[in-house]
Length: 405
Image (tube, rainbow, N blue to C red):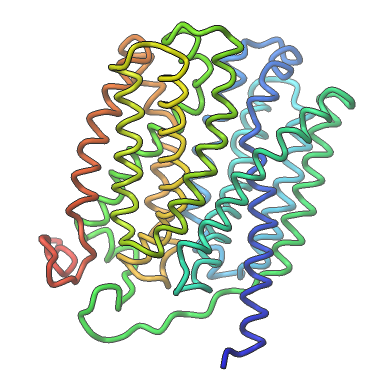
C-alpha cells in the first residue's frame, strides 16, 4: 500500500510545480511590450526586441546552473529566491530609462530568474514520478505554456487600463507571489536507487561521464535543431506570413493563435504518448512533423493554409520535444543527475534562439534559415531512429563512456 505521507508530498510538489511553471511561462508574452517600450525609450522596436534574445540565453544559462543551487540550498529556498528575483526584475524593467537598463533588467535578470526556477522545479517533479515521467513533464511544461496564454490576456488588459509601468509592477507582484507559494509547496525529490548491473537506465551518469558518451552529443544536436526551428519560426511567424508568404497583416497575425494551440497540443499529446512508446520514437515523430512543416514553407504553393499548416507543425514539434526531453535524458543518463545533465543540453535553447536570426541576416532572408532547418531535421531524424541508451546490448555505440587521453 502506498505511503500516504509520500503520496501527499508528491501531490503537493506537483501542484507547486504547476503553479510555479504557470507564472514563469508568462515571460513568453514579451512581444506585447516591444512597441510601448520602443516608444518610451525612443528606440527601434528591433533593438528593444533583442532583450528577449538576451532573456532566452540567460534563461538557458541559469537552467544549466540550477542543479548546483538545488544541491546546496534545496528546492524550496531556490524557488522562493527565483520568485523574489523575478518580481524585483520585472518592477525594475518597468522603470528602465534606456536600452542598456532594459537589457540588464529584462534580459539578464528576468531571464536568469526564470531559468533558475524553470528547469530545476521541472526536473525535481519528474523525479517524483519515475513511473509516469512523461505525464509529470507534460503537466509541468503544459502549465508553462498555459501561463503564457493566460497572461497574454491579463497583461493586454492591464496595458490598456493601467499603463506600461504599472503593468510591469502588477505582473511582477503576481509572478512573485505565485512562485513563492509554489516553492513553499515543494519538497526535494528523494535520490533514486541505483542498481549495480549493466541494464540500460540502471545507473546514473554524472555530467562528466555523460559528456563522454556519443549519445549525449546526439541528444544535444536533436535538441538544438528543434529549439532553433521552433524559436525562430515562433518569434517571426507574423513576419514570415507577411513578407515570405505575402499574406495580409491580419491573416499573418492569426498564426500566433495557431502556434499557441500547436505548441500546447504537442506538449500534451507527446508528453502522454512518451509513457507508452519509446521516447526516441516520440521525438522521431515530432521531428517528422516538423520536417513536414518546413517542407510546406519551402516547397508548397504560398497560401494561408500552407502557412498555418507549417507553423502548427513546427510549434507542435517544439512543444512536444521540450516536454519529452527531460524524461528522455533521464532514460539515457539516470534521474539523480537529471538537472545537471539536461541543464547542459538545455544551453542549446539559448544558442538556438540566436542561430536562426543570424543565418537569416547573413544569407539574406527566411529561405536560408529554412534550408538550414531542413538539413538539420534530416540529420536529427536519422539520429532519433538509431540512437540507443548507453549500456544497451543492442547499442551500436560504445556501451561505456568514451575514454579520454
